[in-house]
Amino acid sequence: MQSTRNLKDCIFLVIKGLAMGAANKVPGVSGGVVAFVVGFYEEFIYSLQRVNKTAFKLFFNGRFKSFYHYINGKFLSLLFLGMIVSYFSVSKILDYFIQHYQLYVWSLFFGMILGSIYYINKDFNAWNRKTVITLIIGALIGISISFLDPAKENDNLFFVFFCGIISVSGMTLPGFSGSFILILLGNYVLLLVDSVNALYDTIFEVFNGNFDFIKNEVRIRLLKVLAVFTLGSVTGLVTFSHALNYILKHYKNYTMATIIGFIVGSLGVVWPWKKTIYKTNIDNTFILDSTGSKVVENYQRFLPEFNSQTYIAMAYIGLGILVVLGLEWYGQRTRQIKA
Image (cartoon, rainbow, N blue to C red; front, side):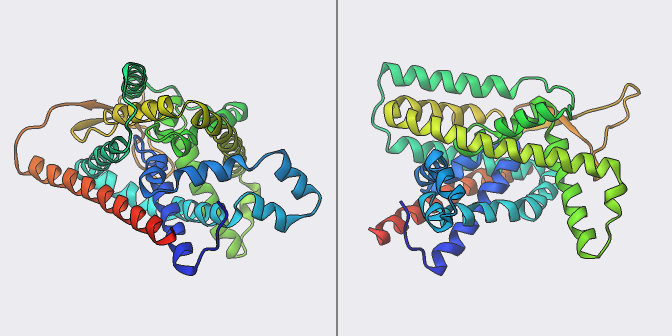
């Protein structure tokens, strides 16, 4: 799938990485859905599973150009560039909007997931008793996950490595939110807020010639946590991609039905009408993260009342559906041009 990409393709690939990275950071939303709808999911999985024994042999033999070509390096590097930039920019903007306009943001995501279900289902023509059963199982898993109580924060490096492996599930399994799994594991704030902010502060200080962070034990610990988490994420990406490539090749219909089920189940996580439950101390004071924001523990869902706010939220749901349909149109047009 290695292909020559012009400047426009490269820019759009970085933008896709931005969207994927932002989606991965939002609890309940899956970056894999972005890849699926925009039309580069199979190339993404294909490229990741090329990181294998042959690739390592090329790399350690100093054949870097062959290694880069073999793993579809231009595609992966531009996509990951977008994801990295997203974690320090787009995702921070999303954090702000979720904090101040929670109902409308969740409504937009709810609509996008509805649109994604339509998009994936419209071309799936293998419905039978077995695929319907796998759909139901996937949906039940997704719904069950959304109602689990989160664990306590744990910065043990072995557990952090495991969190890294699990967190990338949202990139390889559409509808399976890695960030929401991190909330359930108790480490969302530690790994996607505190450690990322620690890296951001460290980079800023280094560029200003300030190396005092070396003496800051808390900062060093957070940087170690982020490094181990990143290593776990890379391990998870490669492992999941190899497993998924095999499953898609031998059990494609069942896998697709399960993915649709996961996405249906994730609607419970992004249900717009919910009350945020924050973590509190014994004296009922709020637990704050390093940015001073209250730490989310879970959500209490309810049915909406019909008022102006609800109508606006429904309009955002419609907008979310239109966004996915627009992405679908763009993906089809791009594939037709390349063909």
